[in-house]
Each structure stands twice: as C-alpha cells, then as structure tokens.
Amino acid sequence: MTTNAAERCREFRALHQTGCFVIPNPWDRGSAQLLAQLGFRALATTSSGMAWSMARRDNAVSLDEVLSHLRSIADSVDIPVNADFEGGFATAPAAVAANVAQATTTGIAGISIEDSTGDPANPLFDFGLAVERIRAARHAIDVSGSGILLTARTEGFIVGRPDLVETIRRLTAFAEAGADCLYAPGLRALADVVAVVQAVAPKPVNVLVGSDFTTVAELSAAGVRRISVGGALARAAYGGFLDAAREIAEHGTFAGLTCGVPFAEINTAFPPI
Image (cartoon, rainbow, N blue to C red; front, side, top):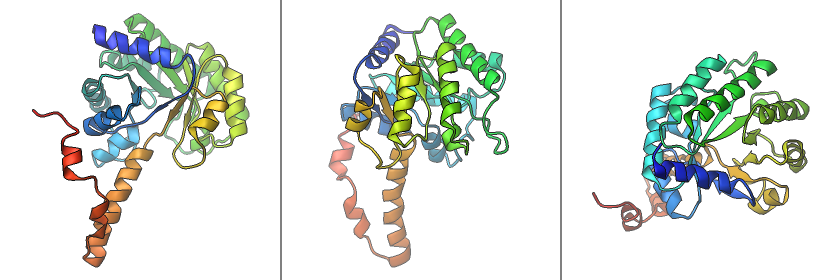
C-alpha cells in the first residue's frame, strides 16, 4: 500500500473516533470528484449505483469489475473511500478472506461485508457462518498490514427480517469478531438506532439514510458516528434525468432541462486533460 493510501486509512479511522460525519456514495469518478469538492471528508462506493451505471441490477456485477471500480474511485479523489464489497463475493470464510485480500490492494480505506445471501427464502447467512465470514475478513486485512477499516453489516431490516434483537445479536458478535464499525441498513426508528449504538459501544455505528426521515443533527445526538446514503444520490440523479426525458418523450416540451446544472459550472468542475 502506498504512503498516500496508508495516510487515508489513518484519516478514515480518525473520523470514526469522535463526532458524526456523512459519507456519501458516488457511483463513478465524476460523481466522486464532485462530492469531494463539496467538502465531504470521505466517500463510500455503492453497489447499486455502480450496477445501474452499467445497466445491471444490484448485486449483478463481478468481483473483477468491482475491484476495477474500487481502484478507479480511490484513484479519483484524495480523501478516504470505503468499499461496498457486498457479501465478499463468496460464501465460505476462506474465499471471503481471499477476495478481501484483493480489495486491500485497490487504495480503499475501508470495506464493508454484509450477511445477506441473495436467497429470498433464506436471506441471511446462518449466525455462525456470518460471524466466521467477518472474522475471516478481519484476518485478511490484518495480514495485509493496510490498516483498512472493516465495517460489518447485517441486512435483516432490508431483506424482510426486521428483528431488532437478532440484529443486535449479530452486530455485537461481528464486533467481537473484529469489525471496527457496525451497520444495519434499514433502521429508521430513532429508538432502534439508539439501541444499536448502545449495544455495540464504544465501536462506531453507520446509519443508512435513503429518504427524508431524519437529520444529521438527530443521528449525531443519538450517538451515530457515520451516515451513508447508499444508492440514494444515484436515484436522485436518475430521477431528474428521467423526469426531463419523460417530458420530452410524452409532451414534446423541454422545461425540465432548465433544472440542469449550467454547462460551464459542471465543465469547469473537472480538471483539463
């Protein structure tokens, strides 16, 4: 790992020590650079945003494609980047470890591993296997000497298993297995967020905000360290694009184009060749 990448790992860890920060999710180099210019202190990739930009559904991108994407995003900005590494692109802990080892060479400062299986009938890995997968990811990072921060995610609230007790059981076990940050996407009730924060303390918690149901101030007061938005910024961008395009297709008018960022503003946001 280069000195610059190592420094970004140190910066990323420091962000998790105190306060609360937002880690927005770009889906390509351009969106990453624009977010960095707005002053955000770290970024995170989004599996859904990346997949949609490739005309794929979420979780339909290969390991090699993701590794290339991580290198591209990390190389495009000077701030830390967390990798949405889905389920590690494997089931067996040893295979997860091997894939995480590859990811540690891409310039990322953090990596997230989730416990969802993709099987609607059995959407979460069995508890013991889920824990071993996090322990394997921890070992791979330690062997790499990279200092990359490991986030462990349990997906119950977004895969039809909204059980707070089980969510906390998994997150506390993930913390004991070596996760540095804990994450349960889909939590919306502030009381649930507080319960998770208290259960895994002093380790930091990430909360996903995909709609207007809370504020940074509220989550900060609840003890949340990190806030991400997943594919929500990509959805917002596609929303504006589709609204304007539908108007043209259905009405033959162009009023929606007036909402676009001025050409000069967007063009000069990127460096010349």
